[in-house]
Picture 1 (cartoon, rainbow, N blue to C red):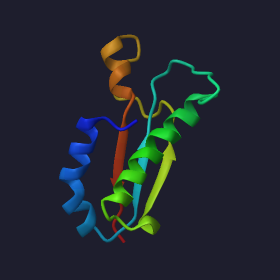
Picture 2: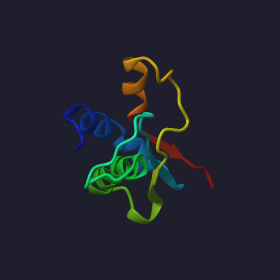
Picture 3: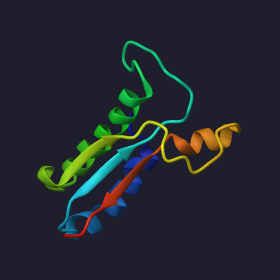
Length: 101
């Protein structure tokens, strides 16, 4: 689920993303806590789902579908130490990478 805060941020990025002519990769990340549910058998499925949700929203904003690729990155790279809850929360994120031609 995309949060209201996430939607607002993506909406603000819309002009930049529409102006950008290169490829865009949407990278979903997770923390290092293993997951094993019916919906998400592993962190890879969870990270891919996060990326897919954001990708769908970007396409809904008018970004060309053939320029956007979702990618599940699981828990890497890790910007924050995983031992502390704030660091783990920050690793549960989505990043947008813009490529130039």
